[in-house]
Image (spheres, rainbow, N blue to C red):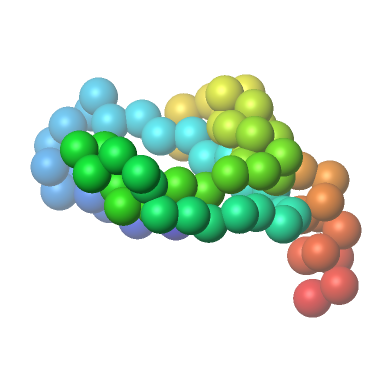
Length: 77
């Protein structure tokens, strides 16, 4: 994913595009958004989403961080 972002940045010649990624594994609730003016028709809720958001805020540009729960899952692969 990060390689595709770098390629996109080079293609657009925009060095300002910097994206960090936070990944968590866990149960979530997907529901339709009650507000039709909201930019998405669905909302994702739950503790796993909040943890992913906190991890995302720790990620430096052009990096991906994963939670311990995700680490345990990928170790099995």
